[in-house]
Length: 159
Image 1 (tube, one colour):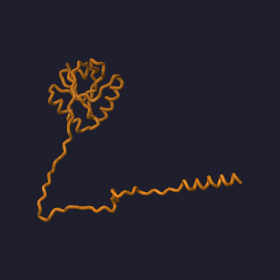
Image 2 (cartoon, helix red, strand yellow; image 1 turned 120 degrees about the vertical axis):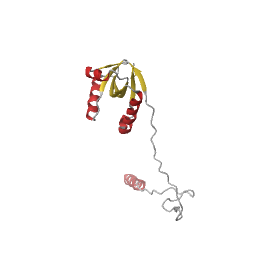
Image 3 (spheres, rainbow, N blue to C red; image 1 turned 135 degrees about the vertical axis):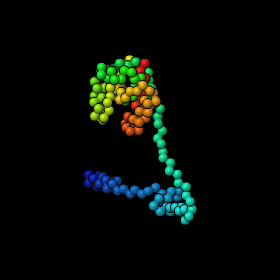
Image 4 (cartoon, rainbow, N blue to C red; image 1 turned 45 degrees about the vertical axis):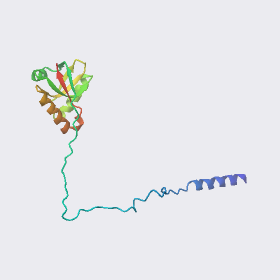
């Protein structure tokens, strides 16, 4: 008899605990947004409204620059870029194989990258080189606008 009473008490508790009654919090300070009145202001007919077409220009982050001594990993790259001082760097790697893989990715995207070996031991993947700093800065800005994923492009100045 005790077992039947015990099991029936457990069953009653089980069914009573499963019952949910969720209600939104009631407060005299909050109102239901569905019943809230909305107020719109409409300009009077003939009234001139001033509209400004202001185009939001994204803030351009400063261009990082670094002076390093570099060597070219391929002779043909050296012949065509040896006289340039400013190099637009799009990637930097500790292993030459990683730089070569990234170079292949950039080739598929239409770039003509070259790999430089820095005095710091890093392999820098360059997409353009210039004699003039202004042209190099302009190219960095254009790359950042055209390719947001390459927003961390920077300039290397060859010593």
